[in-house]
Image 1 (cartoon, rainbow, N blue to C red):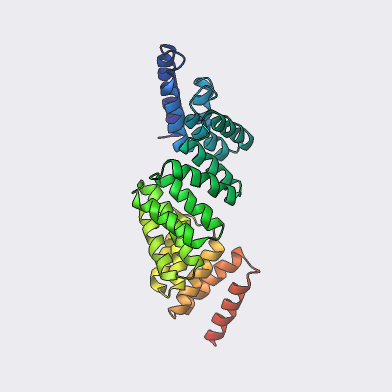
Image 2 (cartoon, rainbow, N blue to C red; image 1 turned 135 degrees about the vertical axis):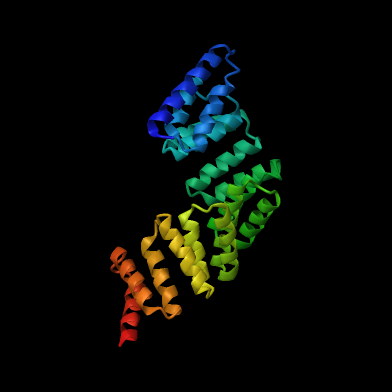
Length: 285
C-alpha cells in the first residue's frame, strides 16, 4: 500500500470509527482503542497517538489498557509519559499480572534488571502460564548473567506454545545463553530455530553465522552470513570479518581476502581483521 493510499485508508477508518464512537456511551469507546493498538503492532506511532486522542485519552481506561499503552509510549521515545501511565496502572490494580509484567518490562528497558526480574516474578506468580512474562523473565536473568535461571524461564515459555514471533525471540534468548556458556553447537541450533520463525531479522542470521563459524561449520556459516548482508546487516564489519574467517578456514584465500578488505573498510583499526589480512597476505607468498 503506497503512502498516499495508506493515509487515505487511515482517514476513512478513523472517520468511520469516529461516527461509531459518537453513538456510544462514554464507557464504550473500545473500537477507537482497538484501532490504536492495531497501529501500535505496526509500530505506527503517529496512528497510535491519533487514535488515543480520538478516544479521549487513556486515564479513564482500565489498568491493563493503560499499562500496555505505556510500553508503546516508551517505544515512541515518550519515556516520562510511559512512567506516568505505568504509575496510574499500578495505582489502579497493583496486583494485576499484566500490569506487573508491563512494569517489569519497562524496568528492563531502563536497564534495571534486578527490579525487572522482581516485578516479572510477581506477574508470573499471578499468571503462571503466560509465555510473554516467562520470556521477559528469561531476558532479565540473562542480562543479570544468571544463565541457569534464564534458560529455565525460556524453556518454560516454550512449553506454553507462544505465537511464532514470540517463539523466535525465546529461541534467540536461549541461543544467547548457550553462546555465553561456550556451547556453540547449541547456540547455532537455537538461532536456526529463531531464524526459521523470524526470517527477515538480519541480526539473527548474523548470530547464526557467527555460531556456526565458532562451531566449525564453515560452509553453513557463509550462507547465514551472506543472508544477513542481503537483509542489510547492521554489523557489516563483523559480518565481513566472519565471512573472511569462514572462507579462510575453507581454504578459499581469494574470497577471504576480499571479505577481509570489506571488513577493514568499515573498521580500519580492527586488530583481528588486520591480523587476518596479514595472515592472508603471507599465504600468497
